[in-house]
Image 1 (tube, rainbow, N blue to C red):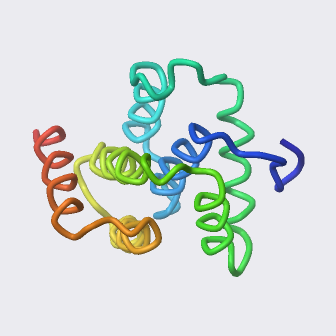
Image 2: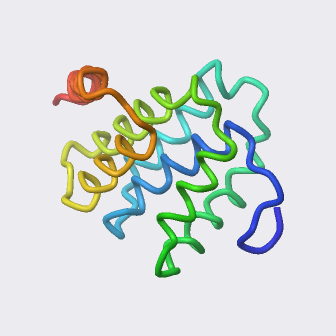
Length: 140
């Protein structure tokens, strides 16, 4: 990856980017959210072959894009180009888990999740089930 324009994002980079985007969306990346991201990357089968050293560069791509006026559109463009459709619901589920990790959903997180549902064409019923699962996993 170079500067703010990666030459190629892997599917796993895309998943990490969306998790980071949700965490950063309210301009307050909480420890619980970062732990959730790290835990997902360390534990889930989709990340089994992932080079964890790519996380920092992927995070920087997200931060650089968020500083641009049309950065969110650019991020979703990268996601659509590099994330296989079969992983769209996985991406949404991971993003919901990160959003729910701190026990509260801020308005910017809710808006980003809504945009993600639209951009990834997540069926409303499927989205509701994914959201319900995230809530159930993070109840205190």
